[in-house]
Amino acid sequence: MHSILQGKHLITFDLDGTLIDSVPDLAVAVRKALHEVALAAPDEDAVRDWVGNGAQVLMERALRWALNSAPEESLQTAAYEAFMRHYGMAPNALTQLYPGVEQALRALNGEGYRLALVTNKPKRFIAPILSHFELLPLFTLCIGGDTLSEKKPSPIPLLHVANQLDISPSASVMVGDSQHDIVAGKAAGFTTIALPYGYNHGEPIQSSQPDLLIASLVELVE
Image (cartoon, rainbow, N blue to C red):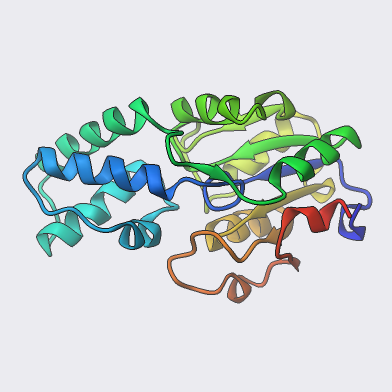
């Protein structure tokens, strides 16, 4: 195990951009939702830059792109509901695990670390996605963006996990791909580990000054 895990008992992970590349499926759902409200649809690269703050913000960004202005509330609601419906129909059609994810999670679980998931994705999608990859049993607790009153970059979801599992923040780690993960982790008193391959709105994750930057999760278990 990597030396940064010495004395740690809880490892929390982000989902999109950290464990899975979900943008292909998200982009399909965004395009179908915008088609329903008679708006132009973006390409996959555009959607990749919009992911990370939850489904509501994703659709708001998509609508702003299509309209070149802020959407009216009724349009925002209609587009969001359409997105949730389409994404819920096929959240795993094109989504893939990043290389080394399954190996690392199973090794960490086997070493006795408590694993938790803290994502801004709506909670209803977490279990179907993790179950698809046969990873759900590895996680003790899963928190979605709509589970609590606040989501990342707030530290509240991370502190909630630590409290629920009775583990000190100083013995906890946050692993993610975006500034929201690192900001939340630092504010919660967690050690922060960043991955450079995910979704960080075009900004290098190094600028968030994580405690450790790794190219792959397998670096934690080698």
